[in-house]
Amino acid sequence: MVAATKKIAKKKSMRRVAAAATRSKARPSSRQGSRVVVLIATRKGAWLYHGDSTRKNWRPDGPHFLGHIINHLVLDPRDGRTLLAAAKTGHLGPTIFRSTDYGRSWKEAARPPAFPKAPSGETGRAVDHTFWLTPGHASEPGVWYAGTSPQGLFRSDDSGVTWEPFFSINEDPQFREWMGTVQDGTPDGPKLHSILVDPRDPAHIYFGMSGGGVHESIDRGRTWKSIVAGLEVVEGLDASKLAFHDPHCVRLCPSNPDRLYQQNHCGIYRIDRPSNQWVRIGRNMPKRVGDVGFPMAVHPRDADSAWVFPMDGSSVWPRTCVGGVPAVYVTRNGGKSWSRTAGGLPERDVWWTVKRQAMAVDGNDPVGLYFGTTSGELWSSRNEGRQWACIARHLPEIYAVETGEPG
Amino acid sequence: MNVLIPAPLRSYSGHRRVEAAGSSLAEVLADLDRQFPGIRFRMINEQERMRPHIRFFVNGAQTFDLSLPLRATDELVIVQALSGG
Image 1 (cartoon, each protein chain N blue to C red):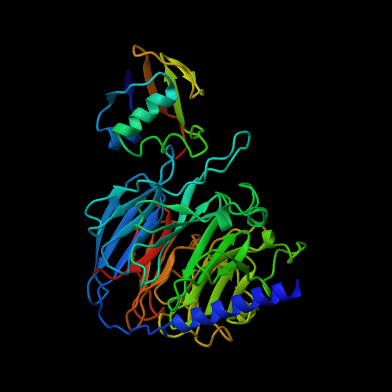
Image 2: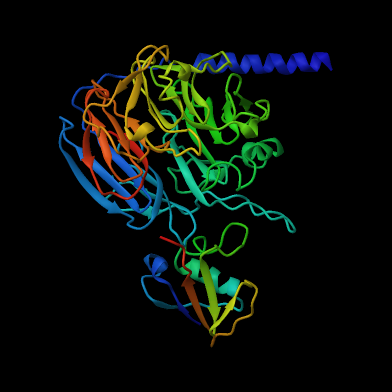
């Protein structure tokens, strides 16, 4: 028995060494004046905002899928032309739309994410909507990952035409217990989100579950390990139970993929792998603001820099701008301290918020920051948050904001 | 049989009324999917359950039974139920 355990441990250790050996050092590039497209997913359709080289002027392109509920719209960074949109409508079931010509035409996935048919006598789960889309590793063109509600993880090997479920997650009794029911978690259904692929190693994947914690695989999703140590849960609940952990948004630093940041239901955190311990860096936020929020964004070249958009998590959890005053907070030292950045934003009487997928960065130098509001405004900063300008108003409720560079 | 397609699904069918064949509601829906790939999954989920805001009427009578026998002379009306703003 002991010998067998040692043999398995040795095999796992060798697998880690082999994976590490195939990893390449991440080298995020610094770019000036690259054209940026901002991808807006809303409750009533999708828009593309094409920026010029100054990022001052934006050309709107939309609506695409007017009236459809678009939870995520993502441009494939491996070709700069393929777009995937996670869609459903008030009446119709969920699907994935694909464009291979940068949004000029769209075609529906032949087999969208769906759970297996349950055996006779069992209820089985049905995908209500695909919530999250992540392109695969640069060395794996055509690979995409999707997170759904109810919670499920899916993979496509053909650029989103067909999707296969991860049985190691979706049908695993332990994961199913952590996922809870459709009544647990986010009001419009618990969500699997923040699917992150290590830029050094396509087999190394993270994801988050609201609720259900943060999980890691180093073998392409065959086996998983939970990473929740240090994360807090709502007062009175047992932090040892993963079902109570609610990561809102997890980000991996491209310049140091061993560092992850997290905006959680219960604070802002950082982890530096191989440590398994999250550190609550939100304790260093101003007390009157707190560290509750949905989105988080990380600098593409500086792992010490990250941005959050705090929300009001007091009393009945209004989830609006704290005190009716919108502000982005930035850290430049890995969360040891935070600074308020709100130049150009309204100074009072603002009651919208920014959802977990609705804040993004571009790859330019200085970094461009973007966020979309629940009231349908798109804001941008060309100087890493020091000054903000409104790109668009009167859009439907914004669910997600992503950036891309057209190929 | 004659099938009335609701507005949200006409991007698939291209027409308001189409012809489909089958001896049960399930078979007619399968034929619709053969003609218009993807249309069935927008109405019926992976557990073979009707989606919450899609309704089926055969000769004016609502049915929730996919195994309901149908004749070629029947009329199938697919309806988008109210689903909020």
